[in-house]
Image: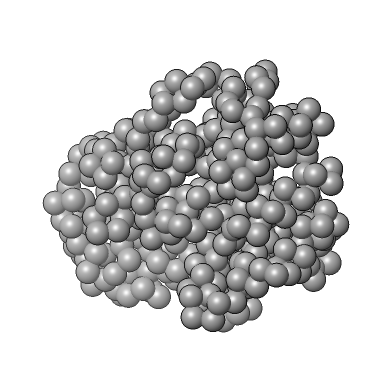
Length: 417
């Protein structure tokens, strides 16, 4: 991202500078959202291969799909944090930033000399965010944590399945993303507080805590009943009818969350008699008699196809939907109408299609994205313009292996990426 591109970016966080040490997904997703909101993101990557996700197939023009998905609108700075010069540069950059974001195991940043207490010394306005798997006080603190680990320990996998089937992870990496999402809440709250006090905060978020916080009513079922919720597949643990129902040629989603929708649905399938049937007349009765009601619904819907039922359900004002593939979801009219996909040009990968952030301000979405940077592509710009390094200093640092650039630019030699 060039300086002119940075100046063109708009949003509520314009002028906020973030030093991002995070990698993989938990952390990079948060910094990408901050970029969408207008913040300048300086992503610190290891020398050589960079963020591990740069190497995850499939690729477009040599650029990983995974890296593309999580690293738009960021500047890449390739730096050796194991060298004294590299650490010095990182500290100098932190002193110019509003936020430092990291997702290492507890203690790693302290051992590097980049912990909260070190970086806030003389910079009390700094907001420092640590995303970890389990937090510093957990019996699991020193263990590695990835999405599926957080999903398993949260209990979510136990209910994410059809009854009698093996536990399954969620199709989206919510274990990772939950940590990022809750970190954003904390960071924005800390920024708001800093406006009043001038003081920063150390924001700490654990992936497992975040997943447990997202359980919603599932945890309350356990607290109220003393029993863990059981898997119900696409159905709802306490609402009937709700879920995926077979048609003559597929399935359709029906969601009767209120009594009005249940009445509409009963009339829609030609079974208005079920409305006054004492077995199905109220929420609790339908739940207790789910085993009797579901076969009646299946029988009523089996004779017609999905298109028929979608039209009829809509006519009767019953919440419904088809079950789309990822491709179908991305190509649907709603996505086009909301401008959720944009195209950017990458110097090596060519035209990239990206999913934009969903937040609108005064009817407008995020600034146009800039493509994910090549590894180290912004190193000289960040250090020259942000810290005043001269071209000769940059060349000397690169010669010593402290930093690198992947493209030709002032202060950096050509490097094969």
